[in-house]
Amino acid sequence: MLDGVPNAIPICSDLASSIAHADAIPDYFIFGMAPASGMLSPLERGVILEAMSLGMNVVNGLHEFLNDDPVFANASAANNVTILDVRRPRAKKDLRLFSGSIDEVTCPRIAVLGTDGAIGKRTTATILTRALNDRGIKAVMVGTGQTGLIQGAKYGIALDAIPSQFCSGEMESTIVEAFEEEAPDVIIIEGQGALSHPAYLSSTFILRGSRPDAVVLQHAPKREHRRDFETMPMPTPASEIHLLETFVDTKVIGLTINHEHMSDHEVTKAITLYESELGIPATDALTRPDTRLVEMVCAAFPELEKKLSAHAQ
Image 1 (cartoon, rainbow, N blue to C red):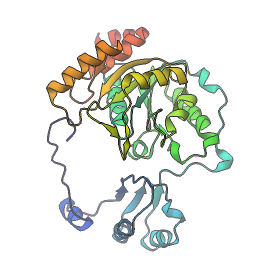
Image 2: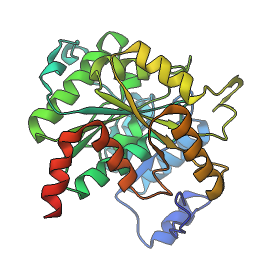
Image 3: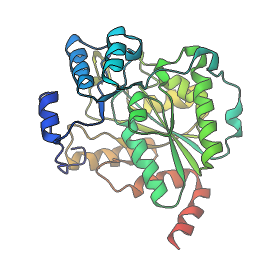
Image 4: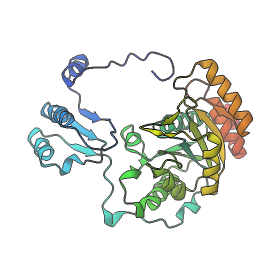
């Protein structure tokens, strides 16, 4: 429940109870956890092997590639199921270096970045993409992590699994592919981590590889320290904006709020405060109308207003 509305999704204690609730064995078992180590615990290995023994294909989002593990490879063959290691990059001989071809992308590129990890960047990017499409502005989202790929992003890479020499090039090439194949009005790029975060560097490659025309920044006002790093205080939106606009030639066009531990009144107060302090529009993608996100984009790129007008007719 992200938006205050119960969705009736059950929470089961183990695989057996989840299958019993489903009344049938699913075709796929998705391992959607993302531990910092990127590796499986002994218990988790057992659950996945149990799923395979029941005939489920496996979607694996970890750095640990199960197809390379003899135990899982044997289980795959024995049970006639497949394992999809979504974080596995293309073969090294096929990895692409930055070439400058990003300059051929003529539509606006907007990156949704944040002040921390696990702060809602992908959710906001997904909502923004849908809101633009709903109003006649053709938007394509480019995923940059395993969860976005698992959720069905047509274009994307698991950036943190690619050798650093090729990260900018893979980012660039993926955006160029989306532009050439979809001819979108705008491209939305999912962010990872935070540019200011010392543990996660994906944002640097997103910024260098995509060279975004604009950035939407996601922030959690009540979060006091970095997630999983209790000794690291959170940056302010102002400091992150300064860092972003210094690091690359771009402009932060809006702030979106993660409302964790906040009442609706506190969200409204924060929106008003940040708009006054930062001089840019602010909203909460989940608790406020998505029209605010569309307005944020159209204010930065007035040429997109024509698409809105045509769609309304």
